[in-house]
Structure formats: structure tokens, C-alpha cells
Length: 325
Image (cartoon, rainbow, N blue to C red; front, side, top):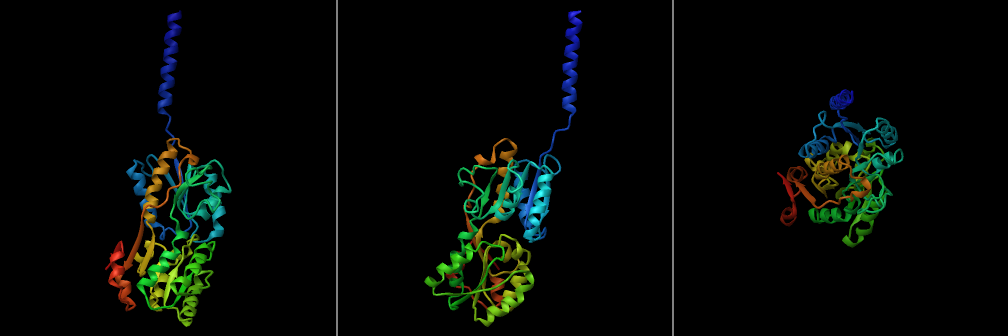
């Protein structure tokens, strides 16, 4: 009798193991919340997917990725963030500080990873870069620390103009603009601040800049995504008004802009995959240091220079990381 009970117990254990083995394994779901349009974000998304593939993750096979886009409309972020939180995703990848802030207001438990944050400490998102201390970590591109460098490069590209038009982000915190205003006197430059609230304002803003005798243009960092969503229009207006310009990202130059100086944002998106991997394997966001960019890129588009009749000085070309011919 005892032998029969013993054999029956072994049978139950074995049956349980078979049932457990037959249970489908839960596939992690990753939410991606971007402030731009799908078209404007396509290169970044491909860089993210490439980084995940390098670590063995394939969308629809061992990971599911849910994309949401605010299309440059900041007021949509809270509702879209709430949708992702409601889907109970395992991780939310946030485009920048504004996006992360919208998500953080709704959850203290779902890990939030910055894809390309500006200054997460000043933005109140993390306690420190080394020890974030909350459910937020990721990468920063230090976009609000690069304005003075862009202004210096622009003066080297176009040494004659004394007045520079500045296109400030309508959704920024003003730090980028303040930096430009602080360094301009030392470079013997005056700034013409272009007032832009929506994309429909761009043409009239450029007309006013030319009337004010601006001889070049600097486009500031834009956490809302409005500028990137309207990049082609900005580039076309700069060319139409023959304004040499420097932009806050590589994408603008690839679309026909003259120059850019920024962290390699595509590398940021690829690198985020390492955070996804570590979090899915059990590491808490609070224990993952925020990563800063290791390389900044200066890119020049000679086709754009030719279009406006500009000759780039040889010493400036020699400093460029990439020259588009």
C-alpha cells in the first residue's frame, strides 16, 4: 500500500512538472513613449531595435514593444503615459525629461528609462547620476550644456555676422537660451530671439529675423519635439533666407541642414537596450547609474553650404567628425 501511494505521489509530481512546462512563458512588454511623430523617430527606433537584437531580443518573439507617439503635442503626454501604465508594461522607455516626468507622475513601480534626457538631476527625476534612487534611470545627452559650443562653432563657420538669430524651443525650460545670452557678449555677438509657439509661426519668424539683419541661425534643443517634427520646414526657411545654421542634432543635417553639434543620439537609443536587459534580469533602476554621452559629433553638410553660397573655412572642415558632400 505504501508503495502504491509512493508511486502515485511520483506520478502527481511528474504530471505537475509537465503542466508547468506547458504553461506559456510570459513575454516582457516594453512601452516606448516618444514626443515626436513616427516618421521623425524612425532612425532612433531602428537604433533601439538594433541594440536589442545585439543582446538577443526580437520584437514579437521574446519581447513585445508597444510604441506611442505624442506628435510634438506636449499636452497629450499625460493621457498617453496613462495608457502605457494601464497596459501594465514591464518597462517604459521615455524620450526625454518631459516624457519621463509624465510617466513618473503615474507610477513609482514601473521602471522608467530615459532614452535621451537633458539634466535629470535639475529636472528632479533622479537624486544623482551615480545613484538615481528611484524607478528612473537611463541616458542623458546633456543637450542644455551645448549652446555655447554651438555658438562658437557657428561663429567659426560664418565669421562676419555680428547678429545671430536664435530659435528657442517653445516648450523648453529656457536654460539653453540663457546659456547663449551669457556667452554672446564675449564672442562679440548680438542675439535676435525668434518668437515661435507653433509651426505656423516659423515663416513669419524667419522674415522678422532677416529684417533684424541676422546673419546666421542657431536652433536650440527642443524637448517637445516640435522642431524635429518640423525640421524640413525650418531647414527650408533657413536656406530660403540664406541663413547659415547650426542645429541640435544629426537628423537636421541629414535632411539638408548646414551643421550640427550634439551627442550621438542614435548611439543613446542603441545603448538603452543594455538597461532593458539588466532590468529584465532583475536589476533595479535605482541601482543603475545614469549614463552620460562619451562622444559629441560636429557634422557639416557641404551641399547645404553650396546652396546658400557659403564657403566653409578649411580649419573648420578639419574639425568636423562627418562631412556630407
